Length: 144
Image 1 (cartoon, rainbow, N blue to C red):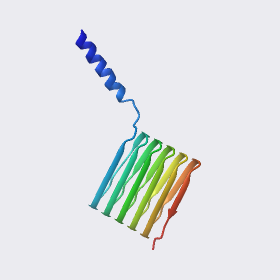
Image 2: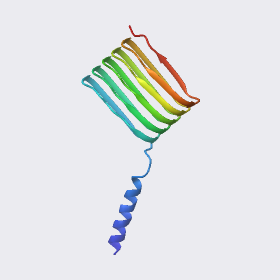
Image 3: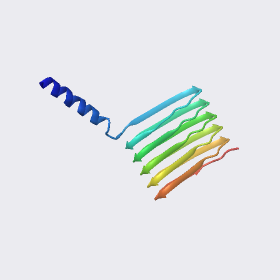
């Protein structure tokens, strides 16, 4: 009887852990040479996604829902891409892309969000979209 109570209590407490929102999760991805792709998604607050890709097919994607989250992507050479979507408040996003294909779509929905980016040589593009209030955006392009 006593062991059944302990087992039931243990199962109930473990089940409760699954419903707690993600807090202060950190994901760092470094990829150096060839077919790259990354990924993402985080819910909660104080989360961090950092992706660094060096050379060839690149890509990336980061999605965050919640508050005070940070997502950053650094890419150096070839077909590039990226995309960061953040929903909530006081989030920050940044993209640095340097050579060849570029693109980059940063979307923030909420308030007090900050986004910035740099693209330099060849394809460029970018599509920064913010909805809400008190948001700040800065972007630099050079292209051809």
